Amino acid sequence: MLKSKTFVKKTRSGGVMKIVREHYLRDDIWCGSEVCTECKQESTVLQRDACIESSLCSYPHYLIPDTNVVLHQIDVLEDPVIRNVIILQTVLQEVRHRSAPVYKRLKDIVHEKEKHFYTFTNEHHRETFIEREPGESANDRNDRAIRMASKWYSQHLKTSETGADGLKVVLLTNDQGNKQKAEDNGLLVYADIIVHRLLAVAIGADSTYPDLMDKHKQSALSNNLNYRHKMSQYAQRASVAFHTQLFFKSRGILNEEGFVLFVRKNAIIVLIPKFGLEGTVFFDTKDKAAPNLVFDEEVPSLKVEEHTFCIFDKVKVTISLDASNVQHQKIRMALIEPVIPGVSVPAPDVGPQAKKPKLDR
Image (cartoon, rainbow, N blue to C red; front, side):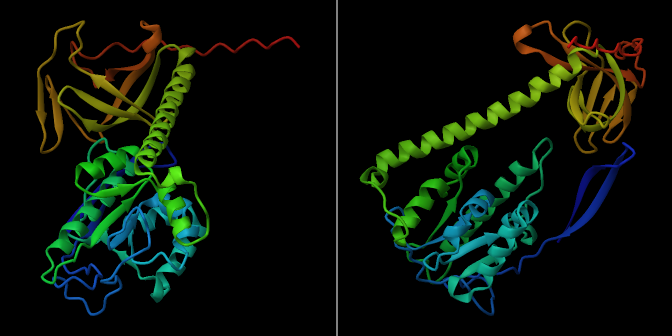
């Protein structure tokens, strides 16, 4: 089965280049488990009796760590007691891009036969490959791919003719959003920091206090850690928005060229290469009559009056800071070119910026 990947790449000259790559999917990729009778595999890696001494997971199970777990808990994964771990291709590629030393250590673990670490090429499996959705970040797409592969493993092992004998798949993650979505899909998922401590106790590398072994207190602790992690992400996004507003606050109204990244039913998403800024140009504003809009989801395209916008079209827009609401300031974009009567705005006169006065020492 053949699929194609299409994405946009910014060139050094400030232009946008469309790149299309073919992606081949297969249905004969093995799961690597001894309990499986569906896959026609010549050899297996994951054991039938996959038991790790743990008070949290007393049943036989395979572990699927996400990228952050591998990056931050590689020392625990190297311990001999940790066996029967599924390393997804998505995780392996992310680790390779983010940390070469951890990637090398992970590859060494996979090559140790007694560890029973299996690399599953989920990005080329027909039932586990997913495409990136419009507006979805690369990290969110990879998290979704990890959840999809984990769900496939859980269902695949249950369909085995020999039966999995209570064998389950456990996903390890420290991302609250990923954890919640995985639980909604019926997956077993735990926070990696807590698992790290429990595994350290299980292998005798550390000691713990009774409260950590209490399920209710452990759940409250995990929820608190996930909540703080989520709040830190919100703070990071708010910081980016705040400094972007500061940047445009003293620059008035700017005229810049951009490219259409996405089209919506009533707007286009525009990329400004000069600033690396993405913004939305709405066509059905409240202060004026809405133009005739025709959205074609198949192309995709948006026809505004007599002009049709498609992805990668070149446009010219104004960029300004809307400070009408002090507590909710926003970056606004309006269309200049192509000129559409009743929709486009005239290009404002943009003079040279005044130099800031030097401070007296």
